[in-house]
Length: 220
Length: 282
Image 1: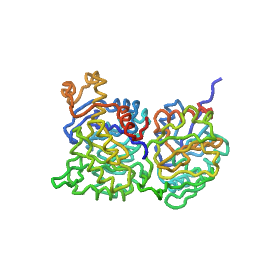
Image 2: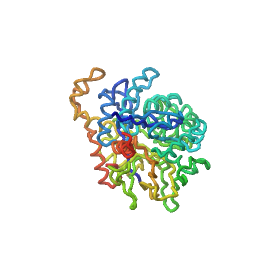
Image 3: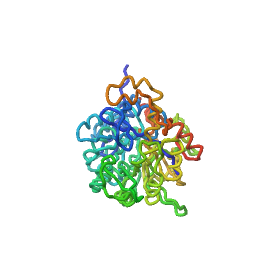
Image 4: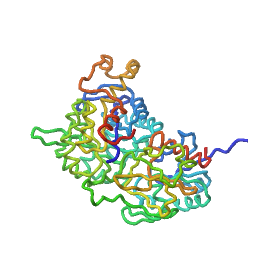
């Protein structure tokens, strides 16, 4: 009896380095394709919501392409979703990037800008561009999660000016420190896994996370 | 301060990696993808591909190199050289690049940069300043691989670039590039003192200490390195020289040493920086 090949839909809403994400999936032997078609999305076994750019523009595109329904319905079906960078931020309630914008509101919380610390003389550079450590919170285990083979304080590649502040602390899978600001760098809440960094740009450990995501949810 | 990024820079002419001095006098050193793969597997934090000929013809060859690289190398790739329009940016990004570096087109038409930032995101757009020191000690920005005047004083230009909303600036000392004399710290510091953008230093390191100096004194976030790394790779792979079929091979075969340029691996560089308490991803 042959197992059905699992399909991962990478949501194409015109923003983000979709091909990098696709290459990273394919490198792991996963079947991943780009899609903005409602039926294709609902029928896949998992979806990846990537994103590079501004929150407001992203929501505008998702609305224009009529993708909000398929994404939220997909999540309701309890099938796995992986959000990357802006894709993670869109899952929350709202963002303060260039004005207040409503998000998908799948996870309660808001998106906030990196603030310049008042007491420090030197300004912090915004956006954060580069490698930074993901830290396991003390109340959280990484076994049986997409971080299962990742070492605590492993480096991942970040490029962002805002970060998520989840209402539910228990959904935080990793924290990261940027010039004294500790923030949520990934979340795991049932079938929703989302990372602020770019696993498809985080070398071998990043690729491993995508592989682990697939294994955690039986996609390979 | 976050991790300093070590970024190998691979200059490309047609299908070959080349290396110049003062941004000209190119010599062929081998295949870009091979160098890229080696650096990726040995600790590179990002990669830069610069198309140093950047003519309107034969962009296909560059796009092919980008695509091949993007399929297997999972760190950020910046591509620069001859990017003139948002269409150029789009096609380079679709080929697999993550960021683009723009110089000449930014000087000629700053609105292009504004549009590009809006279309592709600030973190996707880097503006590159190629500086040449003048007789009176000021630094002026140049275009077209260090060949054409812009008349722009570098600090004023850097501040304007910051207003355009880009994610990063790359600063190249044309005078020091390829010489192994070190980065031009005076040039870099005058800019980093005035802008709060992320900065990549480019042009000139010959010794490990040059890299340490530009980080500690120049306040940069990343360093772009070519000769020191390429010569190390070549020393490891003398057989590559035998298999080449194009370009200036006598130079490679002569085994000329570059007395000012110490060959080094990325790991050696990072270990050295760590000794000076500079954060690196190891």
